[in-house]
Length: 492
Image (cartoon, rainbow, N blue to C red; front, top):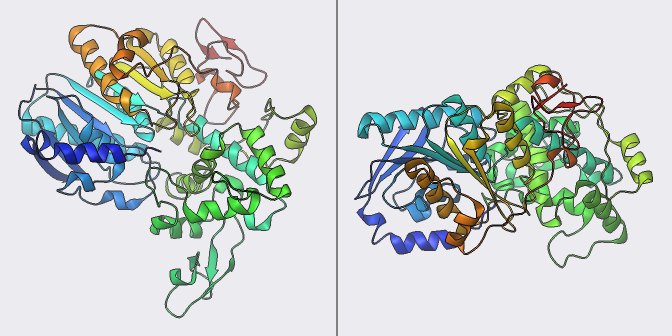
């Protein structure tokens, strides 16, 4: 979750001597997950559980500190922004990386612990950001009668499979644009013992030195198994800021290919030309390149080597890349030269289980997404809506959008959205953009994102039968040579 939470930390410090000091805090460890429950002095009997955003940094798994201002920034929303009077329960989850399977269990374990200790809440809610938005969406479908309200924010509502297909597309576009730059490969170096991986001498066993780069992995692997293990064991190499992963491992090859990507950076003519092709083909803002390429390297590698046992839940066989900002000649050259790989059926099924939304829940759901999000594309909300249309549950979904805020940086909307959710559940007042926007300083917009399929092409994959793919007749909704049966909201 790419959020600068300095202001939130200041708010927490200001509150620590007043409202928060009056709360009762309980810390508990369940199945390896570190949890905290915050009970307000004047508890209204209801509960919010919070699902934090994606991180591959294992340092988040430590116990939550007594001084909450020192808690991992990914946990702070659940500690700070719940409306007054509601209890809050937050968990680190038991693992990092693509944690959806574990997170669903950890959220449910924490909820059951809360019920056993404090009794069944009058109303139970769940919310989350980014990857935690997907966890929120998963939980309310795996437990469709448990949660009365949910607020997945800036979430990957198109599903894991589609979003990681987008990551593969980004990776192969990068490899295509940077193919003539050996230093642009995503790879670790090898210590002089011939086995250990490193980025610098200090990473090697005593007496060893950090030598040449290893042979890079195929793009669909993300990284080699050895490099993946080294990086995940050394999160400081990619997680200088836990809310904006990148770090030296990602920025060094990017700089070799594109030059300095920071504001004011001056690339060479060759670097500028490569960057121009990449940005026009990918259509992501330059400010998001490092974060996005983290997911197109380390993020993909964590899934392959730690979640799907070497299987690939993504592929691009048969995909016709037609970025509208490229000329027809450039599109032809891209399709002829881009790396291709096929998905593995069992890995695709895994990613669909954890997770591809189906809209089958009794929860009332409010989503919030910024239209300028360059990491979790706002078009995710288009596919999420289609899932509810296919399930016949659109009366349970309200989608709100901010014109700016990047990835989850729309703090002004967080609490008003939660308050609108509780009013919908507890008072029957269905929210709208017009009713919520004044509470956040008119931070919302009536504009909506376009079709998902115009950003990331839907594709045929073993493990994802065409008839299971939701659609609404929009451009790119269904794989090539298939059509949308609009009456059923399914591809055929």
